Amino acid sequence: MRQLIPILLLLSISFAACEGEVNMSLPAVSGGDGLLVGISMRSIPGTGMEYVGASPTVGTRTQESLVTAAGVARGISMRGEDCDLLVKVSDEDSPGGVEGPSAGAAFVLMAYSLLTGEEMDHDATITGAMGEGGEMLPVGGLYEKALSAKMAGVGSLVTPVQTVEEKLMLRGISGVQIYEVSSAEEAIEFFFYGVEPEERPLDLQVEPLENITPYDGDSATGMEGIAAGMISSEREAAARIEDREVRQYFEAIAAQHEELGRLGYHYAAANGAFLTGISASAIAEVGAPDIEAKKAEVRECLDSLVEPNATMDNYQWMMGGEAREMRARRNYEKYADLEPETKDEEYLLVYQMGYSKAWCGAAKAMYAVESGGGGDAVDERKLEQIAEGLLNYTEDYGEWEEYAKAGQELYGEGKYAGAIYELAFAKSMVEGEDALEEGAEDEDYARMMANESTSVWGKVFRAHSEYMEKTGSREDAYRMVVFARNMDAIAAEVEAGAAPAVEPVQRGNSICMPAFVLLGALCLAAGAEVLKN
Image 1 (cartoon, helix red, strand yellow):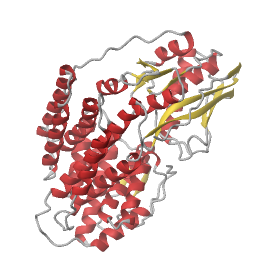
Image 2 (image 1 turned 180 degrees about the vertical axis):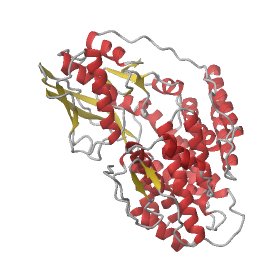
Image 3 (image 1 turned 60 degrees about the horizontal axis):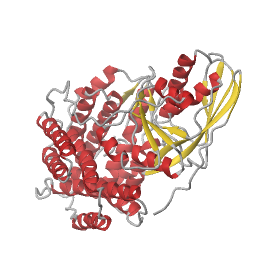
């Protein structure tokens, strides 16, 4: 198995009033792999500002996390209002750029060290987002990050409070001590003063669904059946878990997904079952995994995929099916030739094969929806033109780059329906994020939600947006409704044979017509600046 090159976790600091530098290596995930990224922070006399180096590219969420972290560190230390903080990311560790909030907790520690002159634990690292009140917020990829910390020889990894699934996955990793903290203060006490965080035992209680009222919008015919199939697979995976309490925990989660389906949130139910099913399957098999059998299961599924002829009745489901088939194949090809040498690596491979198999199953289900319904053949040239328009999008995709790359590959293979889905998804996520940064208000979200969807994916993601809004994921909710709206526009163009007249997307002070609607229309913005399935 390809090994990560062990990186010595270095930490050095020199301190004077607003003059110092601290260096840290942080666990990160790139393209599914864990790695350590070098970060340096300097303090200089100034006016209490924060700055990030221009190379490599650092995404807006990372920049925002620095601003939040600096405020938390200044508040805890009661110092630094006249100090500026400058952050530089190591180029060789992150050639593709850096995005995401998971360095927020580390930024707090580094800033605290610079502002107080206190020295951190040299043999520990941390991952976690940071809230404005100093609360540690969850981040993804904990397994991969823990594995990269272990392989680099780090003694301790500090994470946010983990979910049950994360605890079950991480408890099999030996060679690195893993701690959980809930706040910046708790992290500071550990890193600077040697106070070990309190142990947080495994809690197998399932939190009840709250504030989830029935969805009263239109549902996409076919999504309910796909969700039911995902939940069935989730239950099958849970049934293979030997530990009774753990098995019952996963069964209770599956019951919640069934309830979400009854309430009309079919994509939320399917997505939840997709993710939990992968976790349950990995946990059930991690004791004695048969790696070759797992690979064979994925190959068998991929070989069995039969893509129907594209018609006006089924082309929208083919968009989703081709996209997920590509995700399954890309993930399988990435990991299939790796030979695990440790239990940790075996678990990682089992987990990744689970993703490939689940995506393959989703593709098969989407190909089957309405595939026998007949209808006129879809205009492939029109799909190609729309995909070409999306390929002309020039903004930085940031953390959504992998979806864009999958779309580009699908286009190269002549699978234009899937290319449209992946490219439109990546573009919509960026558009939604830009809109929020530029001042999109609650009324902008309400206005977009008020328009009824006419397309399959518009209906699916409008319902999912409402679910995410009800569960407090407002930023994700906004991005999902942007995607729903964009898919509505694409479907209208395919079915009308011409670009539809649609209301432009309001983005704070700017107005932007989705580029694919006019196949290359420019976005005129006033100062415009640029989960997992």
